[in-house]
Image: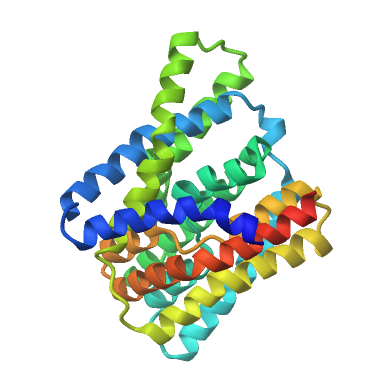
Length: 311
């Protein structure tokens, strides 16, 4: 456990460095926004493209894996929604809370951390988790919020969802990489070196950006945020572990990566969605802050356990 904690510590130290820079004003909110944009559109996209270009679709796509993760995540999603509705929260707020309960920081934190700690073979499973999060749950929250406000489903909602997917650089880079791989298109050495150099900026840049963005987050609605953090850091990986290890036929290594990915703290893009639709942004902000702080311990515990599982 101590060994795993020491291996994960540098990741959280980078987050802490970003947080300190943002909190002291050395790194402004505008600078954080531009750094996040650089990582999201360039560095992380280069990393994902290079990873996926060296994999075949058959190596990534495992329907049993997808169904296991989808079933477990849906169970926690429904639970969080039910609890929110029992508190008489509107459907729009319940959707934000459910998103906090199941959507982890797979892109900015999960890919660099899990690939380093669990090996490059973790790329395929992590990409499947990311794809389900983006395509299924990323679409679902838009449908729920827009549908609840309009009072009905309309083609406009589906167009909004489709455009959001097409414009997402993570989906685009993974799709292009798989297309290159499927057609056996050789990547010239200078281009590969360029992608490696640019992709190498993703890990420190993303972690610093996470910390700097947390500096602007508040811990309002602590009780609800604590419940959502518990869902994300404990209930979600627990549900995924039950599904992957007992209900579906999942390879132990892939199951371990899936569980570790599910243990990640609430993703920052949940706050972006909440802010965009003006639905409980303070609640999402607090859940991100609390879950990230607690994940210093919980993620280490989960990764320590899954490493014994996949050994």
